[in-house]
Amino acid sequence: MSRKIGRRGFVISTAAALLAACGWDGGRSFRPVLSGFSRFNDWVSGLLFSASRRAPKYDLADRSQSFPAYHISAMTPTLAEPDTWRLEVGGLVRTPLTLSIDEIRAIEPVTYTVKHHCVEGWSAIATWTGVPLRAIAERAGVLPEARYVRFDSFDAGYYSGWDLDSALHSETILAYGFNGQELTPDHGAPLRLYAPHKLGYKMTKYLTRITFTGERPGGYWEDQGYPWFGGV
Image (cartoon, rainbow, N blue to C red; front, side, top):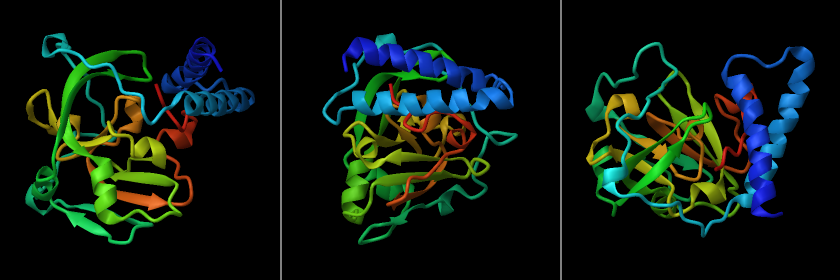
């Protein structure tokens, strides 16, 4: 499939997701159409994805003046006892992990300035710092049966599912820094998932658990009809 055709298919299917994002699904009769667009978007996105493709990088001077924040909870999620927070890594792994933020920060970091894309139609450029998820996966020893990854959050039960190849892309990170500063609660502190090859709703904030699995997980928005792959 040509890049031109792929992009056109992505735009068409994203339009359907936008309708759902605005709270309208066209009624009972239109839901199968939205579902069909979502499946088509997943198919196109899967074809366009490449483990070797890198996102365009930007200078610090290009960073956006504002970067909208979102969460599902009625108020910005925060930890009552931040020092007790731990990231659990489990599922189909040889060595389940329980990591503190200091242990995560001790792993060699990655920093990049990239463009963020939201399904609602806006984009913004920002700098992110974190540890490659691949490094965590290698430490845990992901088993051959694993094909997907589930990311869970303390934001009112928010979660998302990814395919393993997308999760292990070299630019998929667990971010603890934003624009040269420590990540703040409005952007997912103490730790959030980030990758420039995914739409914003795929990047789970307020991470608590990563589970490698053989079965495809759903997701907070995906279960409501949003495209599962969510690639850009």
